[in-house]
Image 1: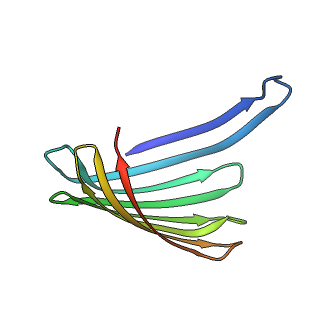
Image 2 (image 1 turned 90 degrees about the vertical axis):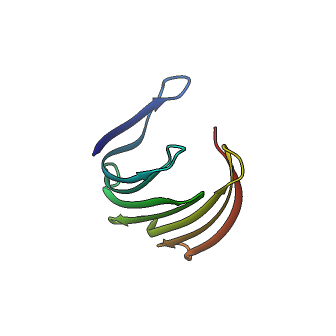
Length: 130
């Protein structure tokens, strides 16, 4: 279990204004299922974050697991509160390693927006891990 608190404040060059960013507290619970020989973790994460400035709550779920060399991940986010930019967000991703730090990936992204139409996106990529 991990707890995270964030409070962002900064000023411009002349320091005539103070700007405030995200203020949130998040509680994360993670259950590890297994480790690969490369120390990759199959896991389930559940978290809840409260954003204090706009009074939004974010519920997050992430499942990541490995079958041989393939990595599968599923992310789901639910936004709760008034005037949220979107309600639900889902990302599914499949990766296959080519080298130890390079992998091919495919992902599907769905976002249920409150202001603009919902988004369905597919992407293919080459992920380089540093």
